[in-house]
Image (cartoon, rainbow, N blue to C red):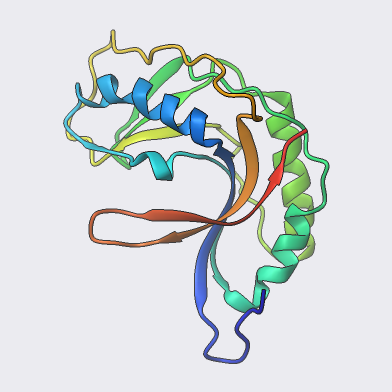
Length: 186
């Protein structure tokens, strides 16, 4: 891959994420649909479902290769993530699904990513990692207290998550996420 160089290099809005396999993405979207239908908001499209690990912000396209190298420094541990509880975050107006506990493997990935990213000059996120899956945006009213997400069983034979470097682009209907590179969790 060739990255643009010079002062006219394209700027990307990037983050590292746990990216679900297609079968898991389908199962997550199906489990989210009844929950999202009970809140007044915009469902996150299935193709945008992910769990953010490290947000980088605006990055020149010429800086992609070192980021690919950070992601390529596996092996990365497999992460088991369940989404047992729902939260409404009033300020960003989003409905999120969260695990009951933070997986140690996820914390290990976050720490290794930030170690590599800090060497490249990216400032570490000061807030602790809170794994979550955004289900709906622009939620206008909090969900009822008894709202629950249906359990999601393991689906398919492939590993459910991959580590991905993701590009976020703004569109009138909402953001679109596109993995630029991804790596297996083993």
